[in-house]
Amino acid sequence: MRWKRPLGLFMILAGGAAFSMWGFVLARDSPKSMSDLYPIYNHARVLIEHQDPYIESAPTYDRLLSEGFLDSHSIAVYGLPIVPCVYPPTSLLLLTPLAMLHWGPAHFIWMGLIVSSLIIGSILIWTVTLDQAPLISAVLIGFVLINSESVLFEGNAAGVAVALCIVAVWSFVQERVVLLGSICLAISLALKPHDSALVWLCFLLCGTAYRKRALQSLLYVSVLAAVAVGWVRLVSPHWPRELASNVAALSLRGGVNDPGPHSSTGLIVNSAINLQTVFAVIWDKPAFYNFASYALCGLLFVFWLIRTIRSPMSIFRMWMSLAFISALSMLPIYHRHHDAKLLILGVPACALLWSRHRASGMVAFLVTGLAITMNADVPRAILTNLESTMSFSDTTIFGKVLTILLARPAPLAILAMAIFYLWVYWRRFGEADACLPSRAGQ
Image 1: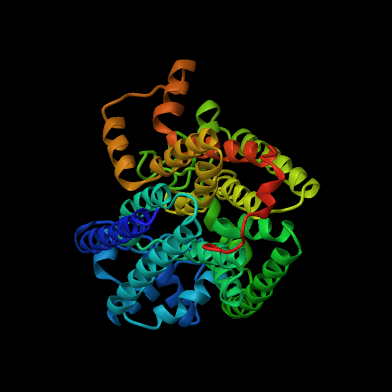
Image 2: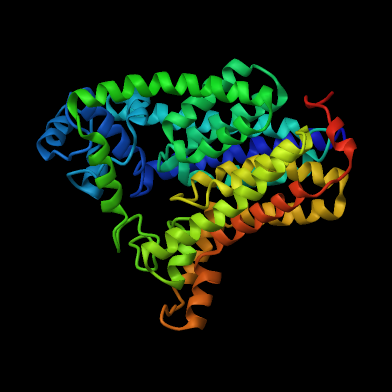
């Protein structure tokens, strides 16, 4: 065990160093450099200028460009006006400190935040597994990191939001620096609420101590929301309608967020990973694929909720819950592979099963590893190249099945992970599981 711990730490640090260097190189050379930071930074800047961030204004952007607050490279690639703002007021409020800076220093600081938060969150989760399977967990976490360069060079907010959610989970379950954990979860909820909302709900429903932490986070994010909404209402009294309109515009058939087979981002490497992308292949009608996704995810959640209410919570069961919730979070509504870094929360559950129930542990490693792999940058790029040589038909049953299996592997793998950990959560592995220590290393 002694040699496994330093080797595991080395693997995680090596993965972090690789994704950092690769991400910074691609940020300099890739045409998609900072493509995800570009819109939110600019809309936050528009809000600072006391303009409506949810209605595009080319003259405003031209002026900001001349003042050095916009990136001429990004504008050359994506043009003006910028893509409609689909971020809530809380996200814009959190980005205003960066938006006060010129683009150059702002995007470098943002990249530094992504690198530091992801690596710190990864190490903290790995420390939970030191007494169970430090090498197995390091393999999974290191693989996530070494395949995270796109979240860095594209500047996606999930890099910070998910990492802060992971830090909060570590803090709550390990009962350490819980005030910091509550703040981290609040920032995560404010930045990308659809990534961490179910994790917050999990803590709310899993016992008195966890509920207290969840309510603390809710208090902090409510304060942020009150300030953000109050500010946005001054310049955009009808911002909820405008935001909904922007989201709907990007989700139209052929749009960038269309889950159907005719999406403008249909390639595996850029496609969404929620279940709508699978059901839309069967029948490309929003009424069908939205209902099917909500119904299936709702059914899984109800099974989890029933078990949670009926059985006392233990550390073992808590990690099984978090593994299930991290997977389920990706499935009912829009997510991309950047958001799937949240699957790191399944690693402690995998390590516990590996050390205590070897057969189930091997299955856990397979399903967790598959879900992680299908959302990793390099495997998705390889699959995209393979997909480009194939022709899929959406008019025959065989063509639909082939499309789902070969062109939609990520949501299927995540669904398998969710179902497996829900099955483990329902099983009774013995009352001794309730005696697992709440702190790593005890």
